[in-house]
Amino acid sequence: MDSAEVGCRLVFDVTSPAEIALKIEARGASSSSLTTSCDGFPFLPVGRVVVEYRATGFSPEPVVTDRLEALLPSRYCPSDRLGGFAATMFGGSDDPVRAVTAWVFEHLTYQVGSSGPSTDAIDTLLSASGVCRDYAHLTATLCRALNIPARVAAVYAPGLSPMDFHLVVETLLDGEWRVWDSTRLAPRQTLIRIATGRDAADVAFATTLSGALTLPELEIFAVAAGDLPFDDHTSLVTLP
Image (cartoon, rainbow, N blue to C red; front, top):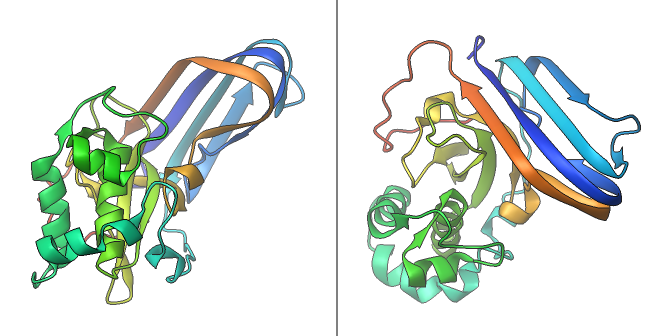
């Protein structure tokens, strides 16, 4: 992971002086840079503003998350409403986490535009389609419904196509947080953590605090050191 390189370019059209919070920094980077085309960041003046971020060299960074919080329902993961479904489908499994991730992969269709900002895990279950955040929300919800602590992690994902910010799930197994990607679109061994939370609301890459702006352009890149590894998506992988 030392030679991996990730980054992004965000272009904002600001129509009213704005304040924005960004979550784009990769955890554990040994070298990084952040540039913006305007002074006074994060207070953005009216006009076009370009933010560019780049980072290289990564090492594990400890992440502390409350185990109890990872068991509770949240805005996009209403696990309290899927207890019966989860128990019926996976309650008898000797390996419920792998059973859940495999089921979500097999039963959902990855379809851009099939969900929106208000789509939660129940909506995804009913529609049987979504994008990475929907796969992650449904996976985390079913795990929590089975009393398995689960959280989501926003990551840079070398190998992802088309390239974008990516959302995956971590579950607590035998005292270790293990990462799962029910989309199976990128090898977990090369994922680079950006942020961790209960659901997508906690890890949004950009949050407008005041003012008004749009995001007409977004570019992300994530390049692994060497060839991409094979991932069977069943082995235990820990996200740095």
